[in-house]
Length: 134
Image (cartoon, rainbow, N blue to C red):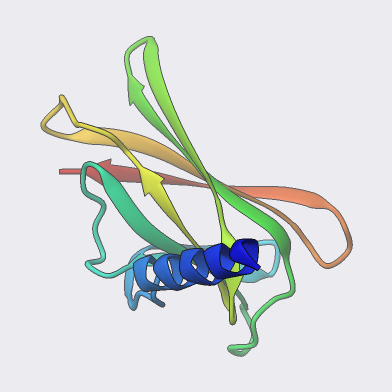
C-alpha cells in the first residue's frame, strides 16, 4: 500500500515539474516529421531544465508514434566534454523530462543535443541539434 502512495506522490511531483511547455527552443525536420524541443521560457539555463520533445508529421499536425525517447546534451569545449542524459516520459502527444546541465563556467556554452527514439517501424533513430546557452 505504501508503494502505491509513493508512486502517486512521485507522479504528482513529476507532472508539476514537467508541464507541457509552450515556447520552442529549437525545431528540425527529419525522417518525414518535425521534432521540436520546448520548455517554459524557450531558452536553456544552467542547472535543472524541464524540457519536452514533440514529434509531428510534416504534412499536417498529427503526432507521430515513437517509443523510448531520450535526450542527451553534450557540452563542447575543446577536448573536454560533459554529458547530461535524461529519459523522457510520454505525456499526451509529447515526451517530457528534466535535464541537469549543471553549473556553467563559460559565457557562451555550446551543446550538442541528441534525441534518440524508436520509430513506428521499430527502427532506432536519432536527430541532432546545436544549442547555445548564454
